[in-house]
Image 1 (spheres, rainbow, N blue to C red):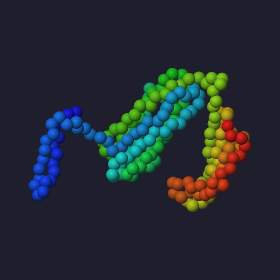
Image 2 (cartoon, rainbow, N blue to C red):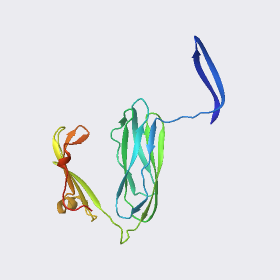
Image 3 (cartoon, one colour):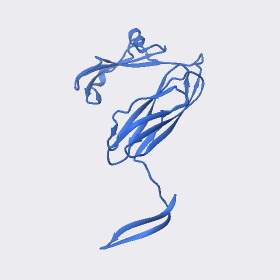
Length: 204
């Protein structure tokens, strides 16, 4: 909207002000919500996409809750972790879409914070049936062992299969495409050496 804007400043030892007429004024939010990139997805094949929540403020911001509104019950969202965003933090929000029928899938992602601002972004995708020439892969990542203390070493295995099998079947019946030794330090997984990554089998 347009409204008079008063600018106060100091010239020498005198405090002065100037009024600018018909200035564009508004209110911005320190949080920014970047929507996921979605296009066409296949019926019966769950898809996970990521929205990004960015804190552009100089202070931490606490997010109270997330909400996904959609007329079709084929979308879900992950919980936000952490709920307190430090200055400059970017936190991913996973959006899981499992279409059961063809057609448009529309939804709205809402973010509520302590700032009493409600951020929203539209989520739009189109679901269609799988065609004979569609290529569908099943990725999977497994840590061995599945838990480790900070600083311990783990092997991270990456699997890719052309079958829409469960993760248990994928790990049991397939060889890892890549594997590498990582060291965990808090929330950071650090690759110890590039020589620790080696291809196993043929890539797809």
